[in-house]
Image (cartoon, rainbow, N blue to C red; front, side, top):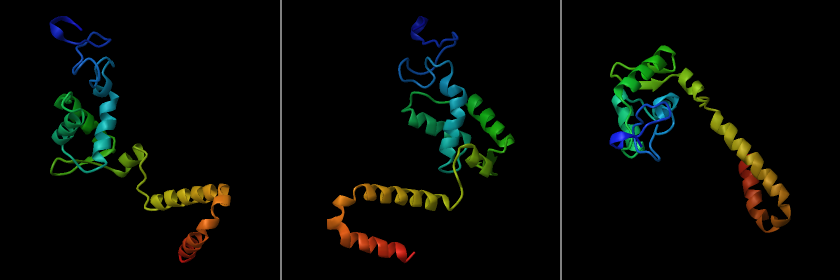
Length: 152
């Protein structure tokens, strides 16, 4: 802890937030660097938001311990708009673009949930196969499940 009860990071800059558990404290910038971008994109995957709403959400999620400054949020958001990761609507709300979803590794392909469900089912079948000695008492249920799959 520095003079006057302030906390300092490794570079000698004042670290905002509490010494232990605060966002950015002791991390040489932490969320005030690259992490803030991913946090904002994570928030925007839910719904379009203004820069002020993003700041409020970050403050709320950090339980009031940290709030990004407008000087860190807006230049970052505008850079993401320039890169095509975000779009900005007439009402000032930022939204993820298709490039933004790809950037985050989120598929907008409507068949993706089907792929996940089929993979899950394949895994379940393998599990049941590995435990087939325990399935005798479930034969009626398995027949109903098979009939349901056959109707697909």
